[in-house]
Image (cartoon, rainbow, N blue to C red):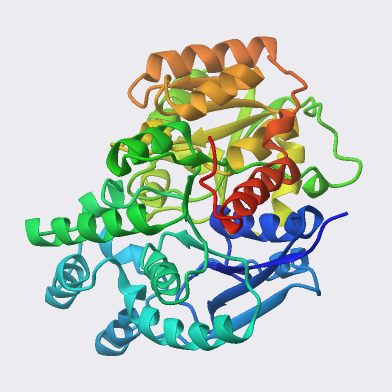
Length: 435
């Protein structure tokens, strides 16, 4: 029987926001009460994000307390100045057509708004939460980033009230590949490293999502970093879902998630066309989620791609399983950047759970490749290995290399929450958690 303790979880992304970062903390919050911890969520009232999944709110227990506090973000001002309905801040970075205002905004984002545009939420949040922490019995606080400015809220609460603090890193900070896309000065780089170092030093526990990120953070911080990956919730799998892929004359390939400047599917498209352009068997590649304008343009300008590539657009997470059910093969596009080795998209575990074969472009020795290899669930090819991908598709086309794969127990969301609870137990008792 557990004695219930309270933990304050500070997160920018929360339903109706969509994405793996949302699922990570929604699932932790779902299972924490079973391990003796009552989650209290603190999140922006009016956050600036484009991808939404209103149905994700159903995952949040009615017993979970969610506190929403207003936020002001610079991008709201940029929208007003541009006088156009920009949908996603990332589009400015991806587009080749940047006017002077766009370039000025990007430079200011890189060098004057550190560590990120949510920095303006830190001081008012600390003031508000200070009163809350003073009058409530919290045994721990958690911050999760990016945005990494949220860790500064945790740092202030730790300094001012001595509350045990866990900092969760879903991406690196000073070594984050996203920063390389910005025109950042050496001064701004140093500022990021200084802020990061203070968080590394003052947090009672550091957590990250992949073995590579864990190793890099331990080298930077000189201390133990806990590894708690993302995972899969068996309850997400619809009742009656068939883990054996359907047999069809048309090979159905499905990709779910974002395609952007650091996720390039073009080598796979090239291989797909080379294999199927001259054969009788049909093929369809479906992209479920937001894709870049570059990919849309490539498909529009090629008559074969136009017939065989479908853009389903963004759908709620629960609806993704309808596409999994029809798929013969699942496609995974990993980043091709300096953080690529540690890149483990949250959907990897969901992909494995469907029982579909997986083909991925990425680092064959990276963390994702290791997981797929141990599960016997798929193959990872380097982005430039068009011949290797083509050979895989030719083999799959004729032999239908289908397996029935289960997610290892250690990736079950409930088991992962148990690891998180153990870390919270340690820091709330004034001890340093062991790896």
